[in-house]
Length: 172
Image 1 (cartoon, rainbow, N blue to C red):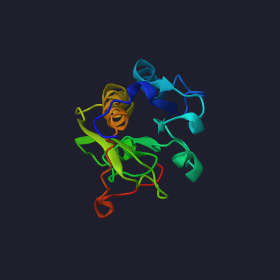
Image 2 (cartoon, one colour; image 1 turned 180 degrees about the vertical axis):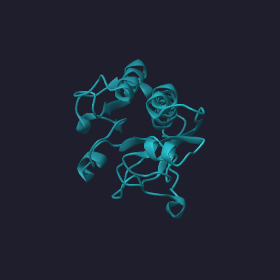
Image 3 (tube, rainbow, N blue to C red; image 1 turned 90 degrees about the horizontal axis):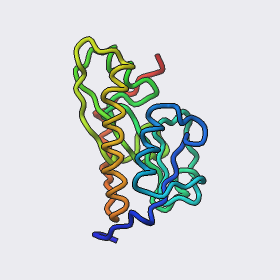
Image 4 (tube, one colour; image 1 turned 45 degrees about the horizontal axis):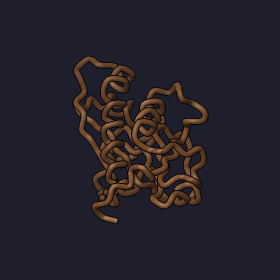
């Protein structure tokens, strides 16, 4: 498959698009998919599924149903800040930068292979919600673009996480 462009054939299922299109990250990703790919209404019919704002653990069937699998978005530089409140923990710990990650899920929580990442600086004095809108969403869409392009061209990236360098924080 390497080197071929399958963009026209790539059907993408977007988790949450049927329920919460007002959520900014889901809307931004859905808009991106609609611009470039074919939107599928069922995960089993898609070439790949994406989860821009996941609020539950997916089943193995859901993860593996699309031929290319499923990509999940996480608002940190995995394996750092695994868990539900990554942005809040980043701010609570006084960090000056973080990032976004699209990853291929496995049986763990936020532990699968990394597909794409981007580093983002935090502006001093910025609030978490403002940071999410200003930086996280655009970076999430940028990295999604790279991820889907790699899949469409038959060259999806998979980089194992170095879990010994990671952290998992509980819900705040």
